[in-house]
Image (cartoon, rainbow, N blue to C red):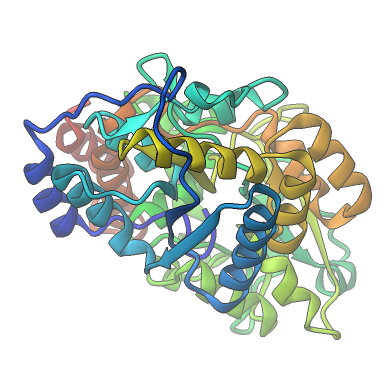
Amino acid sequence: MFVLRRGLLAAAGVATAATLVSGCSPSPAPGGTGSTAAPATSITELDYYADEQGSAAWQKILDTCATQTGIKIQRQSIPTAQMLPKILQGASSRSLPNLVFTDNPTLQQVASTGALTPVTDYGISTDGYYPSIIKAGTYQDKVYGVAPGVNGLALIYNKDLLQAAGVQPPKTWDELKAASAKLSGNGKYGLAFSAIPSEEGTWQFLPFFWSNGAELSALDSAKAAQSLQYVTDLVNSGSASKSVVNWSQNDVADQFVAGNAAMMINGSWNLARLDKETALHYGVVPIPVPQAGGRPSVALGGEVGAIPVTDPAAQQAAGKVLSCILSEPTMLEWSKAHAYVPSKTAVAAKFGAETPAMQAFIDEVGTARSRTADLGEKYPKVSQALADAIQSALTGKQPVDQALKAAQQASGS
């Protein structure tokens, strides 16, 4: 997930598109083994890298693979919120592009329509990848999507502000609570994070939720309540601003750059922006955990490449392009350009050695989790219910236990 690259779902559009798709489940065409169709020389590709930096970096990747494969790539880039509705509508009319890069939590919902083909049909191996990344692209035991890189969240801190206050970067919840309190006052806050009522708010809360042993199938568990109470207490104590319920991740970065927050929970995609602030000295550590010695469980962000059902020749061409994108040199190039963690463990280790600021994000991938691994296509509904509960608790509308009880009922999980 990056500045809304994780895919904030447009609920009304998704509901309409999902209705169109119901009852239409095309059978995937064969991967092409034994196909006599003439090779395709061009394919269409769809992504949501609409921001200037992301779009330019992605275009470079596509240009590289067009040159290497000899296949022309006709690219279409759309805003994030339009992505899932467009894919579902395309699945209904069997008019999807030949290659799509979509937010990983949406993959299972799309695959459930029968609109995708297994990437293994095109000779794409899943060896060497972080297991959680392969799980994110799997539906009913078949791999329908693979990511060239992933992103996640970590704790980014202002070195100068922490040094002046005599505070060490926190590793545990107790240390984070104490540090946030000491760094707050005079209109400044120790910690900033996003808690808007959408997938973005859920995404930012999940490291606290999962690291404490809570599960999305039981939003009203004692572990879940303990996690939400911890975050709520940070806001109620003044260690975090009450405005977190309105702040997007972009807004959080703005507060951090302006010096209004000494620490923030945010993603690796912000590092290029922070590096432009020559007077800002920052550090990055993993998100603090409930107990010393634990490891955080963050949610995997980023996009998976998938090959829809179109025609055998175009599918084979798309498979060649996707194989190029997933090759180690291209994977490393994309990760460097976009501050992603390479999806293969060996490539990630190489990247970490070359890019120290990314090491905390790389360290977290080993214990990161796919948001859809347990719930599949049910995840979006559960995510929204949890986001609503976070809002209710942080605004004081409901006590934590009542907010989570309502979320569990609304989620239907």
